[in-house]
Structures are given as structure tokens and as C-alpha cells.
Length: 445
Image (cartoon, rainbow, N blue to C red; front, side):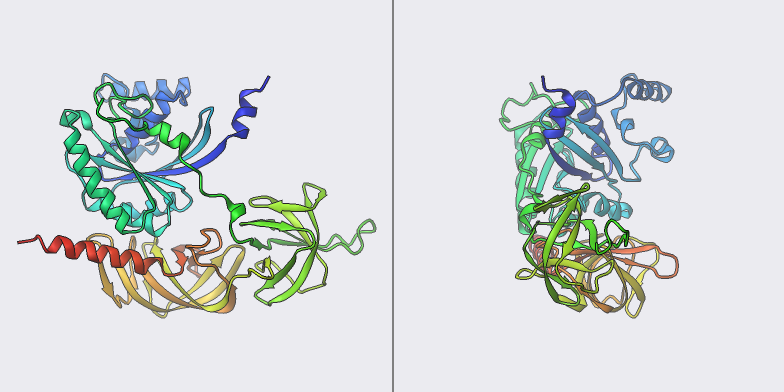
């Protein structure tokens, strides 16, 4: 008989993030999702019930299941990114509950950077607001393939279909203009549980899936084996023992794609070519390996390879450059300025670099584009040009989220300054945002 553990190990994994404005009910939705899917331990639920009673609430405040920091509980807001792991018989989930305040936009970037799906909440009474547009823009920049618009608090608008339809139409048009490939709108009441796990008896006009049904069935598009094959070298293995006197292997985790014995490969940034003669995985030799396996590659030629080098198929290698043009989200409190010296960390490689230019900034407060700002401050998203001291093998973020992303780091204390996405993603989103702003201005009398 198949055990529950065996069933879960065979299911797919979906990483998703929640986002929305303050008091839209993100934490309540997550708590309801965990509670109604029976993913909450008894002692956790008892602790929430006691905390709710101490605050004078008759029913358990399910938001407390995710708001774990004392400051979050006292203020009734989400501050940090809260990660939750749960599973059903159909799929495993890693959920990132992100804050809604403007000053925590960088936290949403952190939570959504690895997500395949983003749940954006909207209060049915308020509709699409500025923060909703910010979160749609961030999802588009991070190339999140699926976005769910959860129109919450439908119970406070008498479950009116026209209210939901108007909000869904406005958000879908805006997100589509930003390049979001798939948008699904679901009317819910997180507090009452309508359309979260169980279908709502109050909205018979809605025939779509519940939130959990959609999460369980949405196609997981993060098939790394279908991407360009990339292998960042983490460690060079040379035991030099009597048993293996000539062994030399290059260990690491396959970032994307598939590698096979006999395949010609290039070692970057040197550009030297060779052939894979062996692949070792878990102490055994195999003929093929794929992402995200951790393996050791053995090569035909004795090439100078060290940590930070990238091994890729000879006929499908990424470009090598020292001039990196990218979109960054600035996450540090200290600003990022033109002329600043930084460290750039890309996969397993860290190199010295200098910020040559900051051509433009997308200010998330009003979604306006400002040319040549000179610097970026916390929560800003902007376009940067960075010159590295050593060449990098860098993919476009649009082609590969794993090998098209990087971090800018303060060399003085190791603080992460900015999260970067190589390529021209910013230009398309900024243009769409500007166009949307112009369209709004036409109606501003």
C-alpha cells in the first residue's frame, strides 16, 4: 500500500507568494488556507485561540498563524516575509506571506523571487489601489508566470457579482499590459472561508475554482530540465589518494537543463571546450543528470577550472561580458550611487564591480519613471549598468531566472544592496506603467 509520505514525495512542488495592500487580509487568507486544508497542528491552533481570547476576540484570528513576530501581533500587521510549508495529496507548497506596506515592497521582491505564482489580494470595498499596481509591476519584473487576483471581503459587499467583475476587469487589463502571462480572478471571503478551500454557497454566479483548487491544478512551469543547461562549479575535487590518483572532478548543483556523458561543453569565462567523460551522483556513475541535482562532472581535458566557473553546452553557452545591464530592486537602507564600488555575486562567482550608470528609476510610490536619478534608495526599482573586474557568463533573466539573477553586495560589511535581473525586463514594464499613467491622466479633469 502506498504511504502518505510516498504519495507526497511523488507530488509536484509549487512555490507561491501572497501580496496586497494593508488590511486586505493576506495573513487571514493564509491562515484560512492552512486551517481549512488541515495543515495546522493542534498546539498551533490552541495557541492562536488563546492569543485571540486575550485580545477580546471570540473566534480564532487565523492571521496569527503567519504573523509570528511580536511586533506583528501587537500592531496587527505583517512586517517580515513568513514562509509556510504545507501539502495536500495533490501537491506540496512553499508559501511566502509578504507585507503590504509600501516600505516593505523589498520584502515582496524577496518572497516572489523564487515563486511560480503570486496571489495578489484586493479589498472588494476599495478595488485596485496603488499598492495593487506596485505588486503587479513587481510580479511582471520578476517574471512570475501565474498571478491570482483574490478579491477579498466579498461578504462586506453582499457578494455582489458586478463589484467583482469590475475589479477583475481593471486588474486583468493592467497586469496584461505589464506582460503577466496568466491572470486568474477569484472572489473570496478569507474570514468566512468562501472560495478559499471550499466553494462558496453565497456566490453561485461564480463557477471557477477555489483558491486551493487553483493552487493544486495550475501548471508548474519551472521545469528546469527544459532550460538552457548550466552548471556553476562550487568545488574542485582532487583526492590524490592511492585509490584515485588521477581523479579530478567538478562538484556543484545543476542550475538548469540536462548534462550527458559524451557531450561537448564550454568552460566559462575562459571559453575552453572539452567533453564530459563521467558524471558522479551520490557516489555512483551515471550517464545523465538534470537540474536541480547535485553532481560531480569529470572532463576529458585538464583545464584550469575553479569555483565560480560555469560549464555549459558548447553550442548553447551564454554570452560573456564585463558590462552588465540589468534591472535591480534596491533592498538596503543605504543608497546605491553611480561610481560606487560593489561586489557582484552571480551563482557561485563573486567579482569586484563598479556602478557605472543608473539610467532610470521606477518609483514605486507613484509608479513614475525618472531618468538619471543618480542613486537608488530602499524599495526603488531601477535600471543600472555595472562594470565588473572579471568577465561573467550571464544569461538574460527572461531566459533563466537562476543564471540571469545576481546580487550587489557592500564590500565593506557584506550587506546585500540590490537584487539584480540581467536583461531588458525593466524597459518593457516601465513603458507599460508609463502608458497606463498617461491613460489615467487623460481622464483627470
